[in-house]
Image (tube, rainbow over all chains, first blue to last red; front, side):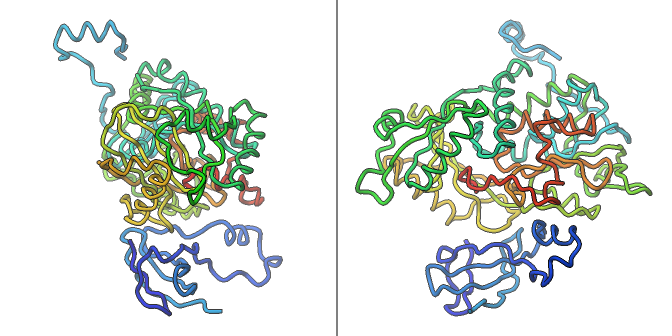
Length: 87
Length: 416
């Protein structure tokens, strides 16, 4: 079980959070201007490292903040507590 | 190959079982083969077997970093079924069920194959609508899905005493998939290995592939292992969760993410449940093994993971869900748990495909891949031998992503 640090509430148990999915790179501004290969790569191909991966978490049973962390897929160590996506 | 039969059992009993042949050989590793298959799991061994049997390609090495059948073929819940959603998927899984039906005889190896219905316990109307839609699709392809009412559901699963009218999610209907089955997972790996060995295929355990090798033209030319370089013009990557780890050694990125999926078993009890029970709304499924253990599975861990362990909160979610419907199970002790690394494609359908690198084949994205072993091996062998996909697997090539032509199967099991 993870101990996730919500930017608003501080360290909380994983059971308070919902996984918000893989943190994509910035969406390209002009997909129409890109090559098909680059667009397909952006849409479908995630990084799948044995190591740190960036992902979003949602403090759904808490304050509702969305934030991004970097977690190691081999150890579950949080390697970067990241920043919030406060609206 | 020594034929297994009642007679051979009796004959060997007379000599105190001292004279059985080894099920497969352990030949020295050559430096060249026609085909290298990376991964001696269910899919890899089945591919080797069908390559030799159906296509006469016998100069094949199956390289395995650990021991034969020690990966996900030993880390699953042995459920075989064909209740999928898409026009592309259902015929493939109907084929795999039909291959399993005859596999014990084909391999001369007792798979302890046990045909038993899978019953979906439906607790919400959206799930009921989704599952009825699947029923209509499956009707087209000869797979079975039959609705039953709650009284019939409780008659078939007497231990399902929860989910009454006053509960959080009352049971509203059931759906029966009579094609479903379970079997002994080790026997699938060992049976395919023994039969492939009989055709001349070599299996090399403790042989870890570290890198794929390309020649000057960019085509695949072999693999680098902990036991030296092994060359082949055709290499198939059949390694489940570590597919991208290997393909990225030649710069090939694939639309796959690796997840950890866990399961656990209870202590053995007397016969209690004779079907596979699937509860899609609360996220748990279970069946009873021949030894009497309840084999219980839930959802994968949230987020990518290469750990093969079980997370306490994921485990508790599955147990709490089970106890809502089966309150009597609260007194069962749980004995073992395991996790497996599985890779899931962007559209949650498998990938059996050639790649941009000539000679490199991948078979990946098999979350829930145990059921798919025979047809997965059958179709990958066809692809390797002919460089043309078998019609059953043609829609599952990598080029579907280039056309954004997804075969969306998310939601058709608990596991996603």
